[in-house]
Image 1 (spheres, rainbow over the protein chains, first blue to last red):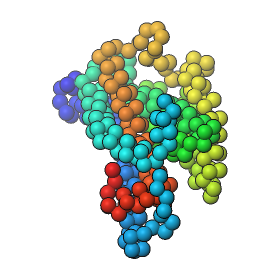
Image 2 (cartoon, rainbow over the protein chains, first blue to last red; image 1 turned 90 degrees about the horizontal axis):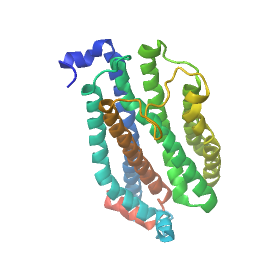
Image 3 (cartoon, rainbow over the protein chains, first blue to last red; image 1 turned 30 degrees about the vertical axis):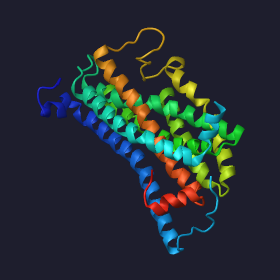
Image 4 (cartoon, rainbow over the protein chains, first blue to last red; image 1 turned 60 degrees about the vertical axis):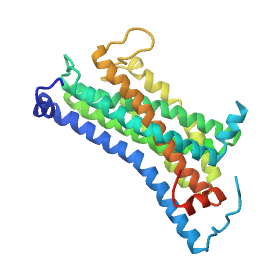
Length: 66
Length: 248
């Protein structure tokens, strides 16, 4: 490691707040772009499963096989 | 070649293929992102002029590079959707927009944070930064335009035209630091001519660029899968998938 201690790595000679905040914001954005579509897919499948159960195994309009 | 092209047009085939790709690509992407970030932040020497603030380069440059490449992917998907009316190209075009917007957002915000200790300001209206802001609005424009239309076929056409027209902005972004006086530094990595960055700083940067490309691919496939299921919700294969209570 370039830095002598974790405290020095956090401080980065006065640049720590800039560097770490940039990385935290990026981490948040990456988690969001990976998690949001996965959540959308799971939620949609759950809703459709509920619809199928309520309609006794059929989904309105379900006929096509592609 | 044409049979592969036709296969890509098949939603269930694409859904299953993306599932098997994501199973190995997603963990590799996460490992590469963590490894590249730790290497760049903790194990490289500081820049002789900028000190430690330069470490933002390991997220700023990859995000910007992939945000630009992602726009080409979106525009090509838009062109395929317009010319061959291929539904899966339309799905890919729509899937690119939020990811591109997020990557452009990362590039703009990290650039702004980097600007403060380096240039003494969070923001300047110079050519590179302003054209990146336009890219951000183009991505958001595609997202908003798609939602604005009730008729999704019309929405796809309008988005494809917007993404194609927007490609004019990409060479402007690339060349802005050469064409206009700018606070933003010119490219450090060049395919032609010498690279002006030390190998100890270059290798983690290259790793992060590859990791961001993999991230874009993963996010694209995840978005496409969600979109495919919604569009194909009346088909038997989606119904079976939902009834089984799990995704591929």
